View 1: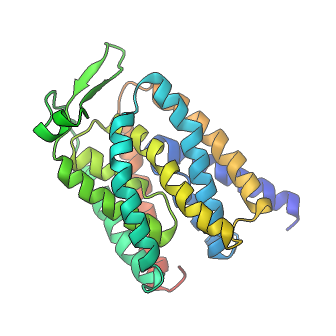
View 2: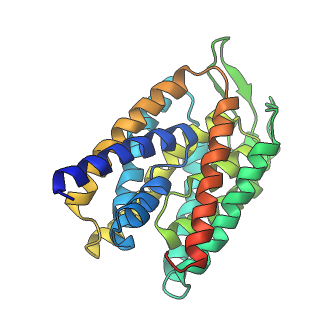
Length: 278
């Protein structure tokens, strides 16, 4: 396979990874890693390095549009980043002692659980009033709809914060943005509208991935020849996804898309973990 053909394959794959990552709040890394390691037989350390760069690109490409439209809750994102940073530091230290294939199986089971939870929850109920903690921290907000701004309240702030510590832990261990766990924490535990959860997750994963990318850059695992088409493809896909999401009027199809993508990723993580490929 020539370099040009390989670059085009990565570019096209990265575009769809960025598109799905932007629409679901997962980030492009969940799709880039299987594409590079299983499809193109790239060393997993270099795949994770490119994945981290793509996560930053996804977040940068789509988060700006979501913030401009007023969908992203920046205050919640910055508050929960405290938890993910604590977890990421702990995860980076644990990574020296825990085998990655064991973590991959555990993470796959968590993904499968989140996919089932998203499938079961068919009706979205928006709480206008948040908890006392959310009110004190001024986390309650509104998001735009064709019928005007809709007010929503945030619940179970402590539970969501603890889940974000775990998301950061997994991110530090596997070098991913942990977007699925972040969406799960905000949508299911904190009762934040799904559209706000995915856009706020997009905003957060770039910050989390940037911290991990520095470590991989220092170790020489970020290859410019591999990362360049990944970044360009993911960025274009993320921009396309942000335009679709901003103009969509229903989050039902997003929930189905999230369930299908996370379900496939869960199977891949468990299979590759059990077979020792990750």
